[in-house]
Length: 392
Length: 58
Image 1 (cartoon, one colour):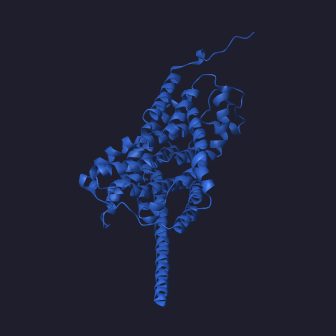
Image 2: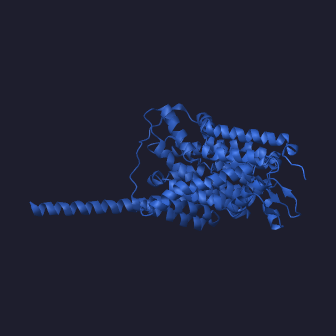
Image 3: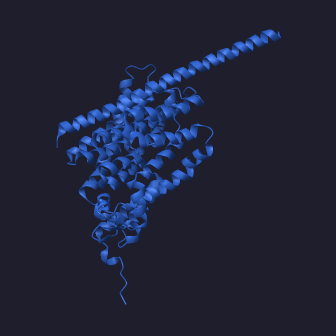
């Protein structure tokens, strides 16, 4: 009778470190309430995949028949050579991420939850969404300086867009080896926006600038305008950057369901149960992709460091551009809203609102900040599409 | 690392982002302008009709 094979013999200090990482993410999600819907599943997934011999969880069988208890970073190439996922999560991962389904499904849900009215009311906020993509390109160059190749640098740069699904979508295509690291960096730093943005904003604005008052209300946007908007954005972006079409079309489709007024059931489902279900798989699978063997390497760890720079530079780009716009605008805009061009919806808009009120209690910037926030999502999708156009 | 190639990629890509969002801003602004004008015209017509009706009644 064969002996019982336990995981103890295969336990390593690297796996212990990953358990701690997973534990910290669960702690931040539960205790600090930082993106709990994502950090809790990611944290649990990390702990799970680093339990030895979990072949039926995130396992993978190599072309030569060898079984692994984790999904190797180059799994896509290995599948083409005859390898196959053997765990329940690795199978979900294969189809959910290998076919880009999960990030795109998330976008349908996000679209159903997004209100574009502030952006439609003041289209000039599109420019702030574009300027905040500066973080993508700053992080791109820093990543190159650290020795990453051009495709990896694009995937690291896109973290600065602060848009999880776009980061996953682009990294899966350009640098699948970094998928877990970029995704977790994007979501972790999105949760940390209230910590990352304020020091950067304070460093580049004066108190007088932060005090600038903006009338809290925007013009009323008609229902027809709201319906036309997602169709127009899809057509314009689709014609200019076809590679961004999957992301933008899903985002705008979800929004059309929201604003049409006749698909309330679909909109409620997409923005509620549907996005929740997909988020569970996204978080759980992403966490389970972070096995010690593939994550505790120089590359993925550097991604984490560079992610902070990406977010900081994105904030810098948005705020500085808002100050630049003030040279021409009357009345002036509060440059804080430039920071909301970082598309961490609605986290960065909330940061702007809070800082605006601290500087001037009369200020209520939330509605204004939601404009660049929504534009930032479109901007990041366009940046990802542009990278794909030039590199695929 | 070919920095020239990287700079070209980043420049073109950032340029595309700005171009796309500027076009979207202009198109959205124009659509808003048209809708607001149509709305104003409709309201004017409505007021005129109401005024005529009131006149006729009085």
